Image 1 (cartoon, one colour):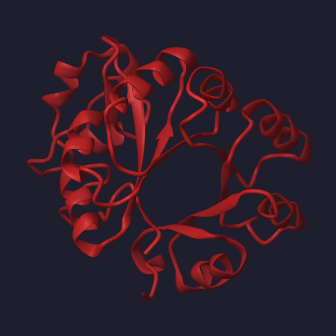
Image 2: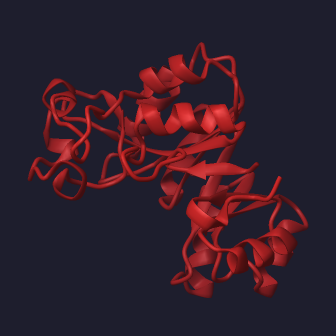
Image 3: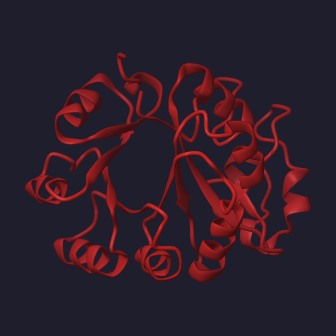
Length: 224
């Protein structure tokens, strides 16, 4: 089933919410999610830098305490922004996790906090980021943890080379618009390739050929 992008979300079920994660578990899908670090060094599961889009609030995650963030409701639901620990307790090893670290000049602090949160976790997981410094930090301080690099369609050949060299990834997550490029095939010869975000049957058809696992949502859901 690949990985449900930000959980299995949809109408009435916000992305990166515990409800979305419960739905993914029930579907037997892995979970892809995003994490950020609050001003008091707590790891929250949230994609955006600020809360405007999902909570109609101007609060910025990195400048706000976890307690203040937890009071915000996602969309017009009763769902709140969870801590990484909440997600880990819910999943409890039942499905694999892909955790994307969202950095804003805090690579070491966020990486350290995520590693600490995962220290006693028994399930399967991988850590990844657009920021190659995360992979570099993990390779040095937590080499036993599976680390990956997220690659955008907009990355130049030089950017890819620099990030791959710096981040030392063991897997890559490639934008579905470029997963069929020759460079992705070359990387796949030595590491697993995931593809994001699969949103349509056409995306799925391409990614199933060129990637080892799909990060999907909506109509990109795998057929089996």
